[in-house]
Image (cartoon, rainbow, N blue to C red; front, side, top):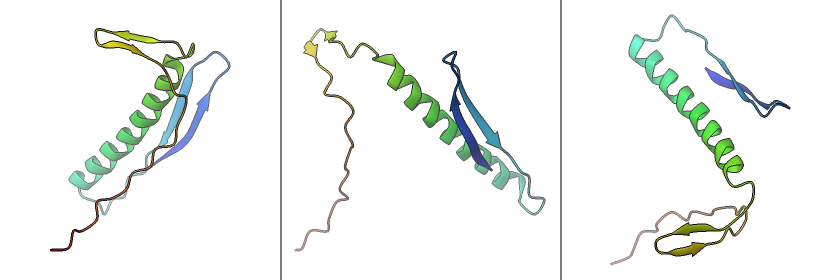
Length: 86
């Protein structure tokens, strides 16, 4: 099971094509877990695309706490915690 293709059509439609193959040796639970993982991947891709489209004006976000400005697309870097010596 895999995400076969991700396409954005000229009309603005976002199309995700999934490939699902069923291995007869796998248990039903295993198949269900693989399907859940695949749908999660597709959902993450769709959410990322919707978030890109949500702020097309790159405007100001007004909340009760104040104004927030977009800093642009930034690559996030996550550092795993290191073991502390005693």
